[in-house]
Length: 67
Image (cartoon, rainbow, N blue to C red; front, side, top):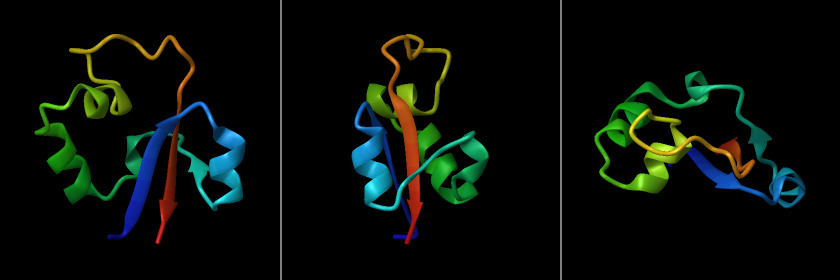
């Protein structure tokens, strides 16, 4: 694994673990992003902010860490 990412409300916890708030999908490895786009998982679709899922109205934050 090169990266770990999450969609969370617990920003402070993940920051203490070394994660950073993602500014956009450009931070994802292109190969990983391509694999995620093929996933049928609704959580992944929400993480990627795809049009086929509801908007992130709950205020979840996308976070990432490079390993």
